[in-house]
Image (cartoon, rainbow, N blue to C red; front, side, top):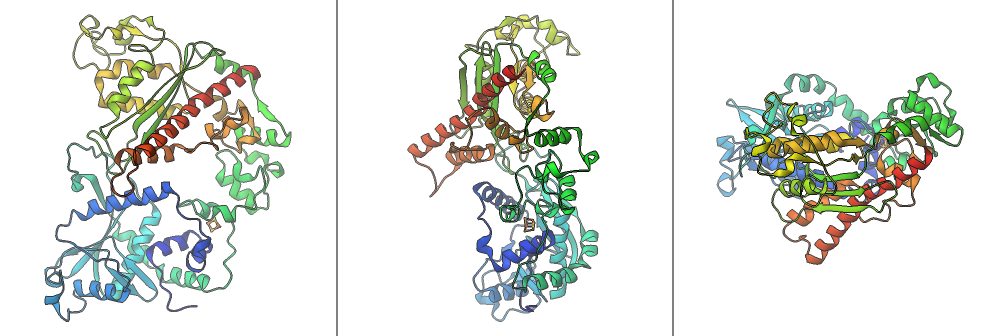
Length: 558
Ligand code: SF4
């Protein structure tokens, strides 16, 4: 065992998840795939949140990461008064050795532990609080392990630790001005008692980790729950590469059972003999694989298709979400719609018409999004065919029958300056995974209540194309245990996302944020912006265009 090796808090957390992962981090980091752009964006969000947390401690000292770790360690000891400064007068911030201000990321070591707390806050005359900042709106058990290592290390190094806090995002915070008040933005939770209990195991855990990383060969850890809990392990590409087609980890919503089967030597779904362990949908999946066929329940597909009313509006939204809200009225990580694609079919075989919207400019995109969506869905302007609907059918949902849902004006329909309120379009709105679109529409109605009347009507028109796949009215083993549009579309069409520049919603939101808000060196030029906008339109367009392929095939099957 290498007695000189140090276990930092990130390595400690990795080691708790999997010793094999820790071994790679220390001994063969090049083998670990680099972070993708989405993960890097998540890190950037964490950095921004960390800076906001620091603003709660004016006068706090950021101990810069330098190449000279010994100087960094010495500086932290000096600022916490563990040793006196040799020449205080020549050091910037050296008065902190007397004033005891908050310290950001002060490094300490103790035995084989190394820790840099996000914030070390002075308390009382000689004690400190450890504050670990998280850019999530809830905390995980692993966060308490993280802070327990810090407590172990700091106390071992000689600091008197009073409290340990986890500081995370207040999901009820609503932005209401240009300046975010960090005192309202964060929730500070005292986890001192849990950290104290977990601290008891830190030294033993570190010794186990040191033993593992000092070996020439990496530990043979079996794949299982540790590969995705508490975090998705970046080594899955390597460790999971031996899994065959139709393996047990493709069981629909079946990670727990997959781990059980795998531990018992069953790799393929077709080899499962304890069928009583499978859910009804997993059983359909098993049968489809076993019979080398697709599973089809024609009656249920027919019933699903019978719900559709034409003209059909196939609709998909793209959104972005930031930890620190960009616009007033938003909560942390609230999804902000910036793009939609809407294909309209007058009947199943007709030529689809595509109406789409992609926000431009740095303003809150929701206002324009709403205006354009209202038109696209036929509530105003050129939106397609409509039928007159008695306003009282809407007002019957209200306590006050003389006002519309969400209408704060108190006006009846006759007073409504917008005559389109009296005309609601017909036709189903087909989306894929309705809770997403419905939630966006509900949030828009809350934020812009004058639109509630048509947003509520639009919600009532929604039919979910996920239904036949999520409920396994149709399943092909080509879906690999997933009912997502990305896995279903290739079953029905050669059209797929592989040829697109943007292949998933997370990248779409990142690209949009890049072209709208990225400033400085990496700011895209006009040509790049145009290209990204085209890629965004292609991506969102395939989501709704792809649904047309699937729909037509469902008609054929039924
Ligand atoms: S993929 Fe799983 S087994 Fe492999 S290193 Fe990661 S957690 Fe360990």
